[in-house]
Length: 283
Ligand SMILES: [Fe+2]
Ligand SMILES: [Fe+2]
Picture (cartoon, rainbow, N blue to C red):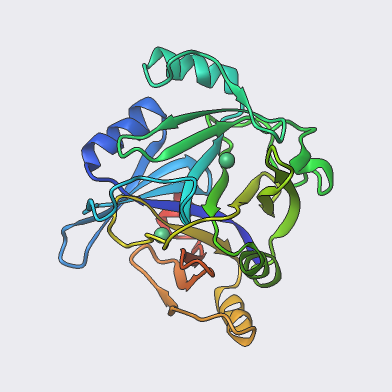
């Protein structure tokens, strides 16, 4: 069973600049680094909240000339639930990241705001309301209202080419629940909200164009990591259902078990079972 989004990974073009932005401006905590086997720098882990991380890889390249495009197939944005959106807007305005200390409203009735990181990646902040559409059917059980600086990753978002194929993959195989569909101004389906667990979602935007630029090195978001409590069981179940396993279960430098699959658009999905002694569990 998939229980959560564990982390979102990105390839900054300038690691120092991005780390400064995410720690000093956004207040994420740098918790640990992982080197390559030869000792050279590989990954810096930033903690958003307990159990939710941003994985920053060294060596980002300009293979892709844009950070994201809401029309093109592939990774779109990362959204963080910041608890108090008005306070966050004021803080980001004072830090010069927001032009005015005001928030917007998504059509799902949750107040939000948008900024860009040094690479141009879209970062959204939201304050999920207890009576919002997300919680209508399935409730807030398992969702911590209140808490630390951030409540954690609110959602990851993909623009998808074939919504039926993506819905089959994420709902029928990964077990996410379709919460609702938002329509555009013309009444056509625009966005599907899937629940990973209460408070953590995947947004699938319809009608993506072009080829997915997903890459291990191109700047921008590179993969989404999903947490599971039984990696081997999950992989065998997915294999039996006909899902291609790109990388078989193995332990990595952080002691966690991981395996890799991809969604119908070629987005790279890491599956991870967190070891209680891993730096993620201890952070
Ligand atoms: Fe969003
Ligand atoms: Fe990862």
